[in-house]
Length: 208
Image (tube, rainbow, N blue to C red; front, side):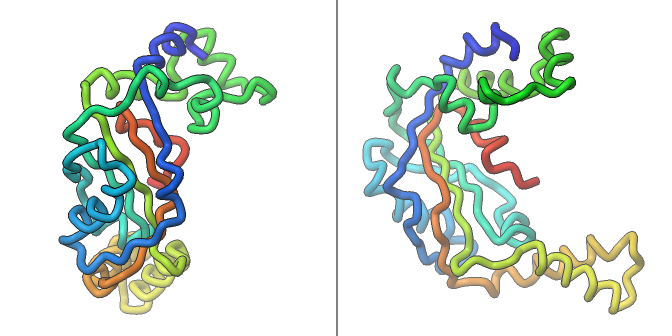
């Protein structure tokens, strides 16, 4: 791990909102996501002030993954020195390896060359922008097999005459058209926290 970056990561702050995890929220429509999720989480994060949704393309994520990855900018700063990232939290977020974990050859080469193979530089850069974010990760409840639905859409596209090259895009377009019909729908919160870097769960909740 690049030691210079490891020192700079103290610019990043992170506070889990454990009481939100497992909570369920019913959302009435695609356009109401920001307002209704903000209203549901506000009692657990009232010191954050007004929450403004900055996430985009929610319909695309819903179509393919049946989940929501939401980032709200807060109007009030609440994080303190006590919320600075330490090594244990960085391990949990996937930015550094456990001390007991054996390094791969790629890790060794990255260390020697000074490369940022964990993208920690991006984590620090976003924290320097001066914003605080409330991030919420939600799954449709009851759980749905998003991969199975996606593969079924591709098979259906082929059956309707789409070529192998086009079937994925055609199937995805069909799933997008179905998104408004998902609502009203219940979601369960998988993770929630306040942070100074919107990049903080790149590894923990990577799905792209």
